[in-house]
Structure formats: C-alpha cells, structure tokens
Length: 79
Image 1 (tube, one colour):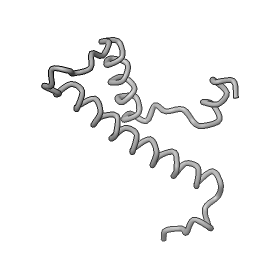
Image 2 (cartoon, helix red, strand yellow; image 1 turned 60 degrees about the vertical axis):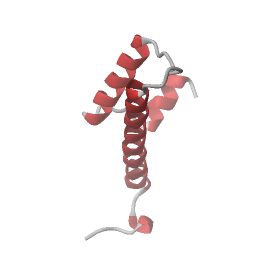
Image 3 (cartoon, one colour; image 1 turned 135 degrees about the vertical axis):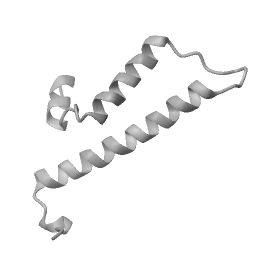
C-alpha cells in the first residue's frame, strides 16, 4: 500500500524528490541537446565538442543510476 507524504521518513521523502528532479533534468537536458544538435538555423550556437561529450556522459551516468546524493554533492562544493 502506498504511503502519504506525511507517513514518509525524511530520507524516503528526500529520495523521492531527488529521483523526480534527476528524471526531469535528464529529460530536459536530452531535449536541449537534441534541439541544439538538430538545429538547421544559420545562427546555430557552436558548442565545444568536449561539452557535448561531457553532457552525454552525464546523462548516461544518470540513466545508469550513478548519481550523487545531496550531502555528498554539497561536500564536494565545500558547502
């Protein structure tokens, strides 16, 4: 049986939020990358190949579940 938000522990709630944001950002980044790669406009922005490779690698890692939790991310940033 499904739990209500009030019944979730803080860890369970945080995991749901992280997963939702990860999925939404993945979809958005894929759409942005597709739009930039398929644009036939003469004023098409030029992206560095390294950026495109990095973005694709990040999307692949996220799809495989290789993500970082919020606390670790903040620690890496020194926050």
